[in-house]
Structure formats: structure tokens, C-alpha cells
Image (cartoon, rainbow, N blue to C red; front, side, top):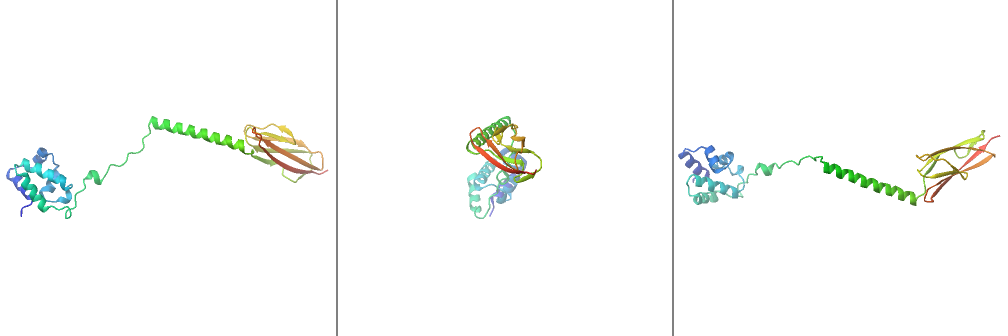
Length: 212
């Protein structure tokens, strides 16, 4: 039994047409015409498209397109022939890389500003509800010394007031502080207090022994 491919090919050759001429006249790609004439449906798109190709091809060759399509329907079965997946679907376009545009840069800047604002609010809230941090470098607790002058040095949060034995001392912008006190007794209690502007306090005490 003659197939669709053989009918089209024999008629084309009988009329001395080349596949290039058929491609130009029907707008069907050359490689699809080759597969169609070879009855190679594995290289063709789904049957709906193939029937359109056959109808146009047969019409150009002045064949009865309905009879040629009837032959196709008898020989073709979607269950027996796996439709060809066209390159467009088999190999989808890869996603383009993220482009840097002025709009995206502006959006990033705005996002950073907003995040910075909320971080600032969080820090202020923490200062409001929590006592300030306070750490001492010197003197060490239970220190024994034979000199009457001791250095009190440490660090706290910025914008915090520090008092040593109820006497306020200077605090750097970074929160660092340093002062000297004179020991007057064999056993000396040194009280260091850090007070935030919201009234929260942190206290540390050191005991220093003076040898005479």
C-alpha cells in the first residue's frame, strides 16, 4: 500500500519539483519535508500540524488533499508513533542573567535605608528597655597593691554616663572610660555605675587591698 510520503514524493518528482522549491512555495521547512516524504513521523510535530503540512503540500501538487489525508489517518497512530518535540519545546531558552538597572539599584538603596532605620529603632528600643553594658579592664577584683593610686578603666554603651564612687567621669564617644582614684584604707570598695539616658543602670564593684 502506498504511503503518504511516497505519494507526495512520487508526484513531486513526476513534476520535476525540488524540495527547495516546495519549501519556498509551502513555507514548510526543508527538514520537515524530508521527514514527511520518508514517513518518519518521529521527526515531525504532532499529527495536527502534520495534517496541515500534508494539506498544503498536496494542494500545491494539485492532489486531492482529502484523499491524501485519509491515507495518512489510516497509517498514522499517535500510539505507534511518538510525536517529534520541536527544538523550541525540547530546548527552551535559558533564563537571562539578572541585569543591573538604575531602577534595581535604587530599589536596593531604598531597601538598605529602610533596614538601617529599623535596626536603629531596635537598638534604641534595646537601650530603652535594657540596662547598659558595662565591662572593666582594671582593676581586677581582690587586687592587692602597694601603690595608693589605682586606674579604673572599662567600656560601656555610647551616650551612657559613668560614675566611680558616685563621682561622674568622662566617657568617650566609643563608650570607653578611664580615670584614677586614690586609695585611703587597707580595704577599698570601688563602685562603678553606668546609667543610660532612659534611667537604666548597671553596677559593678571591685575590692582593692592596699599594703602599707
